Amino acid sequence: MNKKTTIIKAFIRGAVAAVLTITLLTVAADLYGPLKDLLKQLFSHHWIGKGAAAIFVFLAVGFGGWIFRREAGDGSAGVARGLKILFWSTIFSAIVVFGFFVWEFLR
Image 1 (tube, rainbow, N blue to C red):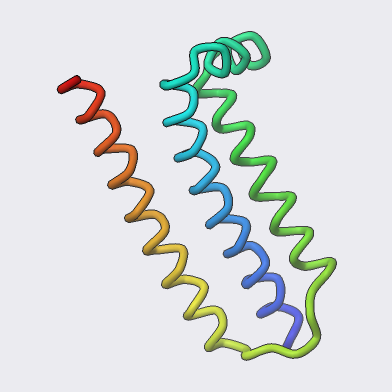
Image 2 (cartoon, rainbow, N blue to C red):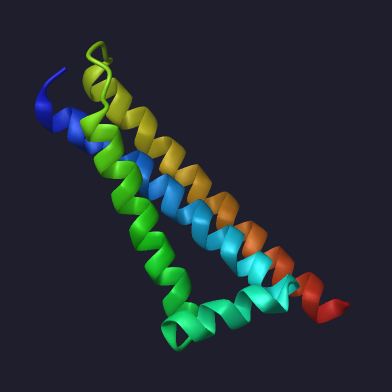
């Protein structure tokens, strides 16, 4: 597996982790007020806090996956699979957030 493919796959994993982090923080902060307050205190607004957490997770998982990579790999097929996982995790997360806010509205 070449170096570019390794980096791409690592940062695709980072993007998946960031999407899931934002989804988790969005739902958790709405259900648990102290978490939303903590994000406000640390970052002046809870949205900025979620963004900062997502950036941190993206970089940590991306660089971690690049530094601690496995030598054996599946090349560009792995990139295509990773992009499919990123696509579907984004769709799933959008449905979760939308569904959560509909549930909150109707409750």
